[in-house]
Image (tube, rainbow over all chains, first blue to last red):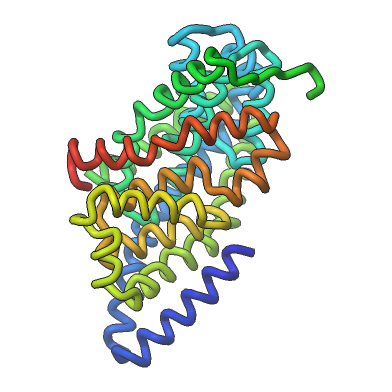
Length: 172
Length: 164
């Protein structure tokens, strides 16, 4: 759905460029974006394959048990590490995060996990971000994002300690 | 360096494929097939977004983009970018297409990093559509609340460490 909207906007923009700047300029833009896209394709395919194999090799229940057992600052680091490692979209990641809670992890670990997944996850970066931005920008953005899951996890713990209630019952 | 990235990635693929093959042929074949199918499924979406963002960047008014979220827009630009990220609806194609179009038409790197960080962490549309149905709502709101300062920290780090 959102792809259709973007495609429609892109076609309108492409038509506007063609009319305003002429055919040559249109082809120049098209060519350079196509080249960037083509250059990234092997990395996108590698990202898809890595994601698929990790999903097969690393059972999510096992991860949930590991994260649930850890606590303290180590717990945040372990949760953030698995956020980086686990491939998949929201429909697979959020249930895993929910399972962490049931396995005994605290809200801080869950927050660190989701934050690491959205900001540092390699499948997302390889498959989605790289074709748009190129390696230089993506690598820097991720390097700068490394401390963020831990900051978010610590903030969440402080919030819970100061009285924000996050109780989860089995079957919730 | 880009060749090195490619080699490294494919080495990882090879190692994982080998480990999967050790677990059994079915696992290996399933992994390879799922990965390849995912790639084919995503290809048109990513292609439309990447090529579209080039044309969208070309028709955006560069002077306006630069004055609102350009490299010299500072904290105000970061705030605008963060707000825009929170309000951007839709999936990854939309967010990345807008971010890269902005970057190509004169937005500053820290501002674009703030935009994509805010959009990744607390795009309101995604919180409501994906996260609330799948997670305890209290955890979702706690996560969104503690994430509020993160785009500013990311933009600050981007300014301090290096300009991508």
